[in-house]
Length: 301
Image 1 (cartoon, helix red, strand yellow):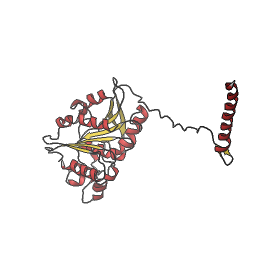
Image 2 (cartoon, one colour):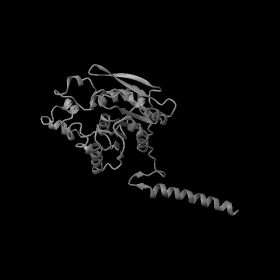
Image 3 (tube, one colour):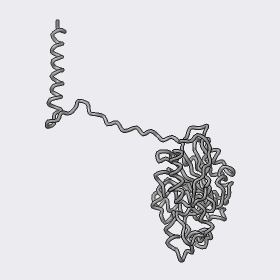
Image 4 (cartoon, one colour):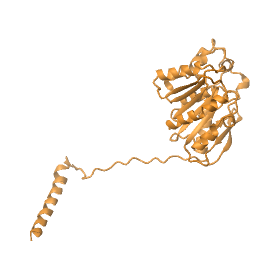
């Protein structure tokens, strides 16, 4: 009997409470707020997957000449990201695979590798009337940025902005890697630079730089402002792994130390410098750095 009396009373009370909430507490002006706020669900980004499943060799034109680009793809491992590996001056692009363990280890970890044949390029962005005519056939850094990378993105869906992308190089290729990372921070998450030189003004008698830029005293602005990672250090926001042998007689270790100090002073504190006290300028040293570079890239995915 008591239950039959209390139930209508409780039910009426609940209705009155709901009515009060919907008509009094949640009315602002003439608009009524909903009892439960609408949830804003962010759009789900679907990652772009590579359009490639095995190794391939392609040729893209530079100045009407075919440039070989070898792409190594991890067919037995889940794809993790892509590494552009740049060769040194007049070194073969195949040296990374033939003379170091980079290809074997990177593929085993799930990285695709892009290996362009760069010949005697010094990775300058432009050439000039003073550039040696027999060197005009070698690709520039501008070609990498405006031709090679966009075409690989379109053809193979590699190096996409939302993927894990890295760039590394040895000797002159280290200079190219740093400059590309500086130019394209929206693509590259980190950079590896082994035994590189980064400020051409430190050695104004260098035949390579004179062969591309012309004499230093006549074209000082080119030497100082073009393709110079040190004078443009504020643009180099990507973390850089630097390594150099203290016994290097080809490219003095002072180049890497100079860039590292500039990075630290500019607030790029994620960059590091590894000095090998007994190493020279050779593939034994560069191979010994493969694990360290790959670990560094893993930490900056």
